[in-house]
Length: 374
Ligand SMILES: NC(=O)c1ccc[n+]([C@@H]2O[C@H](COP(=O)([O-])OP(=O)(O)OC[C@H]3O[C@@H](n4cnc5c(N)ncnc54)[C@H](OP(=O)(O)O)[C@@H]3O)[C@@H](O)[C@H]2O)c1
Image (cartoon, rainbow, N blue to C red):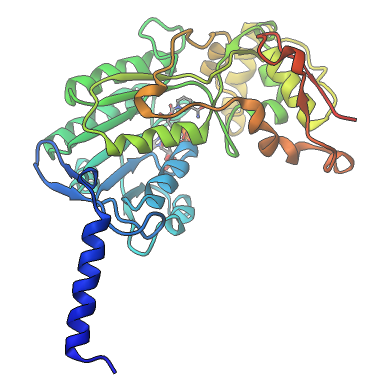
């Protein structure tokens, strides 16, 4: 039988163990609001970081991994969504009450304000590889990004993280990369303490890199397959973004390229060695023909490749140093993960053959080659 005396003793005991489990690093004082944020609870799904994060663009590829990592650490995540079905998979990523869905529209200031009103950190992942009839690159990458940043500043959110692209440049021939650079400037103006993150091309289960090369190799047969890519794992980018919640506002632009550089030709070799499918015999297309086909496909079908993406197929990934140290992440090599994402592209007879081993003699050489284990 539990007496009032034993109950008092139990309460005292639990108070004591909770207090001894905490340390000074569990207490963060949020910047402009001076709100204390205290982490408590056991590690894992039932932990509480005491923080609230809004992830605009959470229904996309990178967004799902960021939400999963934030929720797993015990951060309450506001999930702004446009389409009911696009956010369903995010709900079970956190404990009860940790994932809060809110409908929003980029052009509705009140909805944006409502989504970030209680947040300690706001992430902006909103973007799209192609223009739509409702939204141009300028609308999403510049006007939209500036709006979210200025409303976050107005709501005194302490940290703002804007995801741009490794190749963002105001002079880029690609409208996407040029507006990404313009968006960075607009965000910096609206929210001076913003952290701007520039990942390289990201790979993972839902990517538009490995999967696209395996499914539509002909859309990569441009520039004689000489364009250089610096692919980065989605988990590394998501972990880097998650780690920012443990830091005070970091007013920097961080480049996050992958640790290796591949030409498209080498990416073909890697994909072919893992999928064990014959190489595509599609010819290399001249740029104007590829653009013409892309423009036509834009009209008749879901955009497989937009004309701006054709332009991007000719642009090497920026040759810059990575700023991974600032995020406390060491990015992984693609060979460690590609087999997980590409195995399903194998023919049934090859499904259980041993995995591909990168040629050890070429492991550190940029001209790496691959062979299939027999
Ligand atoms: N994937 C890469 O290889 C890569 C590489 C470097 C940088 N990045 C950057 O990383 C960020 C996330 O990329 P991602 O691959 O996750 O993109 P994604 O899969 O295309 O997802 C884009 C997200 O933005 C939202 N969005 C797009 N247009 C919108 C609009 N007009 N109004 C409201 N929401 C809109 C989408 O919402 P809906 O679901 O409602 O459409 C979705 O949640 C982007 O800024 C991207 O440029 C990506």
